[in-house]
Image 1: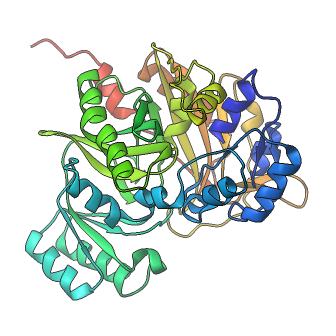
Image 2 (image 1 turned 135 degrees about the vertical axis):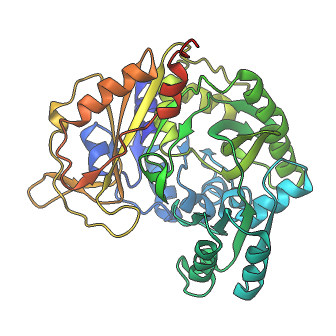
Amino acid sequence: MPSAKNYKKSPQVTRVYCVPGNAGMAQDGIKCIAIAETDSQELIAFAKKQRLDWVFVGPEVPLLAGVVDDLQAANIQVFGPQKKAAIIEGSKDFAKQLMQSYHIPTAASQTFTVYDEAKTYIEMKGAPIVIKADGLAAGKGVVVAETTTEALEAAYAMLCDNQFGASGAAIVVEDFLVGEEFSLMAFVDGENVYPMVIAQDHKRALAGDKGLNTGGMGAYAPVHHISQAVINEAVETILKPTAVAMVTEERSFTGILYAGLILTASGPKVIEFNARFGDPETQVVLDRLTSDFATVITDILAHRTPTLTWQTDGVTLGVVLASKGYPQAYENGKLLAGFEQLNHDTAVFHAGVALNATNELVTNGGRVSLLAMRAKTMQAAQAMLYQELKKIDTRELVYREDIGHRAATAERPTSPR
C-alpha cells in the first residue's frame, strides 16, 4: 500500500495496479485487480496483457510461494527475492544458522522439533527467554516469555497443540536481548546494499510496551536518538555481510531486506530478518524518501546504483488502528466512520478493510488502518496525530496512545540539578 502511493507520485509511472488490493486502496484511486497473490499463471497473464514494465512482489506469502521465480521464468521483469532467498524470512532456523556461520551478531539460540528437548533447554536457560515459530505466523509467532512457565506454555502450544500449524513444527528458542530496538531496511542487489533511514516499531499490543506481540501497532522515522555511528556499524556488520553470505550460499538476494535490530551494550544485533518491506515501518520510512521511488526500483533492476535522498528534518509518526481483540480473536464487518473528517495533512493507509453490502467501508482484518503525520518534533507529531485520531469512531477499534514515546522522551531537555 505505501509503495503503491509512492509509485503514483512518480512522473515515470502512468499506471499502478495492486493485486488483490483492498477497498481502501481503491478509494485512493489505485486500480485493484481480483487475482490471488499466489496465482502465478493469472499474474503472468495479466502482466503480459497490460504490458507492464515490471512487477513488485511485496508480501512474504507469494515470495515464499515462488511467484518471483515464476514471473522471471515467463520473462517478466520483477523486483523481489526468489523463493530460495526469501527463506531468510520463511525459516528463522535458516536465518540463525546463516548468522552463526558468517559471524553476524545475533542472540544465542537453539532450534527444536521435540517438546521435551525444548523443555530441558528452556529450564536450563531460565527466563526471560524468547520462543519463535520457525515459519511464517503473520507477526504473531513470537513470545517474549518473562517466566519459565510462560516459555514452556508457548513451546507446548507450538510443538504439541499445532498453534501455528506447519509454521510451528520447529521452534527457535533464543536468549532475550536487552537494549533499544530499531528497524533497518535496505534495497539489495546481490552484494550491493543501499540502506534506508531507520525506524522504530512498537510490537506490543498495549501502551507501555505491554501485552502480546503483534505485527506492529505503530512506528516512526527517523530515530534521532540512535546515532549514525550505530547505523553505520549495523550496515557494515549485519546488512552487508548478510547480502554477501546469501550470494555465497547461492541464494543471491534482490529486493528489500528488513533487519529488525536491537542496540545492546556490545553493539547492534539481529532480532529477525524479513525479505520485504516491514509494516508499519514502511509507511513512515517511505514518507521520508525525497528521490523518485519508481526510479530507484528501475535502477536496481538494471544493476545501477540508485540515487537515495531523504527528508532531513522532523519526524514521521504512524499509529495503527486495530480491530478490538487483536492480536487474538476479533470480529470483521465493523463500520469505519470519521475518516472523512481528518485533516488533509493526515496520511491514511487502509489495510484490513472491505466494502459491505451498502458500499460502506468496514473492518476486514486485525490491523485495519494506519494514520501518519509529519512534524518538526515527535512531541508535535504526537499532539497533532492523536488529536486527529479522536475524530475516528473507535468503539470497535483500538490503538496505542504512546507511539513514539522513546523519541518524545529523548527530546525533553534534562532538568538541571
